[in-house]
Length: 173
Image 1 (tube, rainbow, N blue to C red):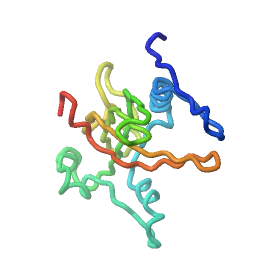
Image 2: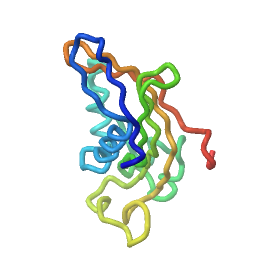
Image 3: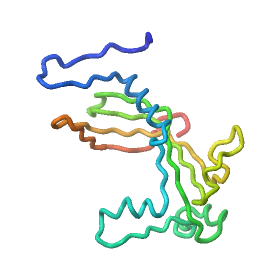
Image 4: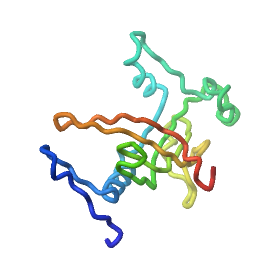
């Protein structure tokens, strides 16, 4: 516990404060990422539902080996035509920074991308020591940096994402 930095409080302000160190925020974010709700699973029906609010027409977004053929031909080559796909996004090694570089929050993390067929066997774990699942088609990890501003109004926090990009300053860039 010797690496925890002392925190500064805004004693002159007249509102309530929620105080959290960068280390505690990083720990919380990593715990969240490791939990069941820290995983994002994208399928055609979920993408349709996600973007339904932007249109009055019913959406049926195809998320198949054929619909992505021109962008990622690997899925079509490995699975054939019109196979439903699922993209699982998870996160690890999250570091949270407060008030640096003219922004309220900086998140440095690794985003894990796991592409699978959208079928019953896609959640079966792979062999011990392998990444992804038994049916993983494509797996990769990306170092990412996201910055955000945070405004609190009447005890409600409003997060505005300013940047969300690859961390090209790491040794694997």
